[in-house]
Length: 97
Image 1 (cartoon, rainbow, N blue to C red):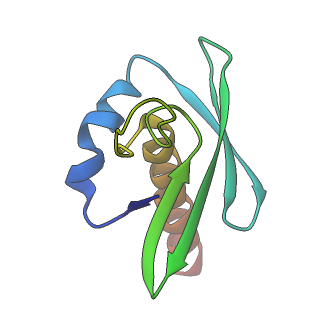
Image 2 (cartoon, rainbow, N blue to C red):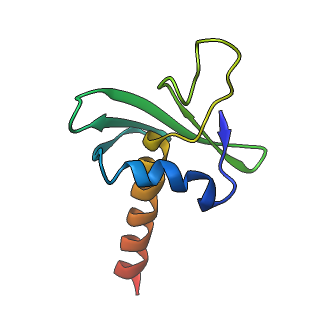
């Protein structure tokens, strides 16, 4: 689980999206499915609030390491969901104004 604190922490992950486009689908509130359009891999990403702070969990190897004692890293899948959520919010705000 990674705490979402500032956009800069996902900058490198977002840059990878330029070379590996992702498709984002909402499965249920707070749960998204992110599919790599080139490789065909797909990972679930959960966005939730814990103690009023936003957290993200991705089930890829970078987001939820299973090997060794590595810590979760901000991955491109979470970056794709955050970009998606910002775009949806911006569209809703424009529709209201």
